[in-house]
Amino acid sequence: MRSARQFIASLALLLAAGSAGAQAHAEDAVSYRDAYRAMVQFEKYGGPKNLLVSQLQVLPKERGALAEGLQLLLSGRSTQLSLPLDLLGRTVFPLQKAAYDDNAALSLSRKGLGFVLRPQVSIAVRPDGVYDVLELRAGCAQALGFARYVDASQRARQCAGVRFVFPRKTEGGARLRRPDSGEQVLAPVIGEPDDFPAVIYRFQAGAERGQVATFNAPLAILPLFE
Amino acid sequence: MNKLLSFVLSAGSLASGAALAQTPALNLMPDGSRDMYVGLGVQSAPRYEGTGSRKVSALPVLQVEWSNGIFISGMSAGMHLSSSPTVEYGLLLAIQPGRDESGAGTDVDGIGLNATAPPAPLTPFARGETPARLAGMDEIGARLQVGAFYNTYLNPQWRLTSSLLVGAGREHDGARLDLGVQRLAFATGERHRLSLTAGVGFVNRQFNETYFGVTMAEASRSRFQAYQPGGGLQDVHLGARWNWTLSPSWMLTSNLQAKRLLGDARKSPLTERSTNLTVSTAIAYRF
Image 1 (cartoon, rainbow over the protein chains, first blue to last red):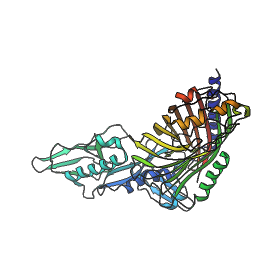
Image 2 (image 1 turned 90 degrees about the vertical axis):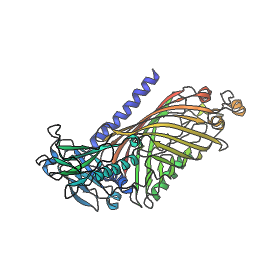
Image 3 (image 1 turned 180 degrees about the vertical axis):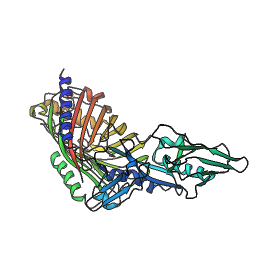
Image 4 (image 1 turned 135 degrees about the vertical axis):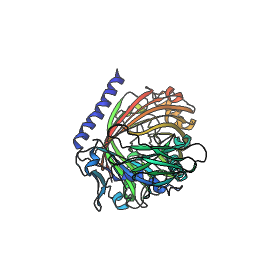
């Protein structure tokens, strides 16, 4: 009985503090320092990464919000930046000591819109839209190397392929050119209504040769691990 | 003495905070930078380990990390030496609160984020309002413990932790080994993060003799019978920490820890209640 009273008293202590905190919850912003810590790991990584790009991705709680020209705002005592977001909510994250030391805040240009941030590593998009299969394999291997570097549980996974993500209003297909068997069209897959069309190219066993040529520039090329 | 040590710990870190810089494992902040939380809250805890009598007291919060790997987290400090994001190891210093006839043990808390410090040091006797309770027992000064920690991440959410500290006890020869597993902060909402811990503590004979033993001399002048404990498994503990990020600068950090004394510590005449709960909450500012 005494222990029950102690427990209830303890919970009351926590809840009382929680109520006080709720009133102090004022601004809709997240810490630049937390984002910096997540993003700088890629910069510190010493393995091969020349085929990769690292970006910060904003995931708004409201679907469709990214189509409205949303921007990520970096606000500190000595730093004020507007970071444009692409259709996937990604932006190049500025690693700035001044913003870190200021404990700067990251917020969205549309107030009141909840969001979370996450780092995203993808394979760099080529301007000519033509990707050698060996290069895609190498890009996926580089991404897997980084994933294993930051997450020990990824060591058992292998590269299975890549996913080309396209804007909704463009033709999102690609063509696979093999030296021995001609061309094969890779049709886009569309999932949920709000999902972006994507072409999945799975690596074949053995030393596959060929090229993947996209009809239009993809938004991102994401590695697939299995 | 304990209050003085706590003050020195706080004042020292605040004074040097502007000069140095870093974080755990590899350097995840700009060179020359630091990350610091300072706050104040309340704690409800047993008056001493093993009693059902509780007290509510003020709880300072301090956590500082510098870019060179040095960190302070509550009553512990140390330095990260690893360059891998999946393994952490390094040197550790911790203060073991002392004890007098009225009890002892002022705590300073961290906020749990990225900290590799072991669970808060055992405070077998907290400063209480029942001076007669420990009348006749020897006074034991606060002890600076030295040691090391080694943590390995199973994945970014789970890590196995271990730490060894030596230097507690009457003759500075008490040793404590902590082994644990942590589910690191996971988002329960945009601004809420909850982390869970479970672990066991092993101590040597000298540690238990100091904090749970009763010498013949103490028995002759106190209400306790002589008791000479051995070493071994001392406790098992479970903990939950809830961090509520109110803004990039303000955080509400709350901690709940259940600890059950085992082995010879549980059998000590000083132990009236083997399982106890400590709960705290504090508001912290990020500098």
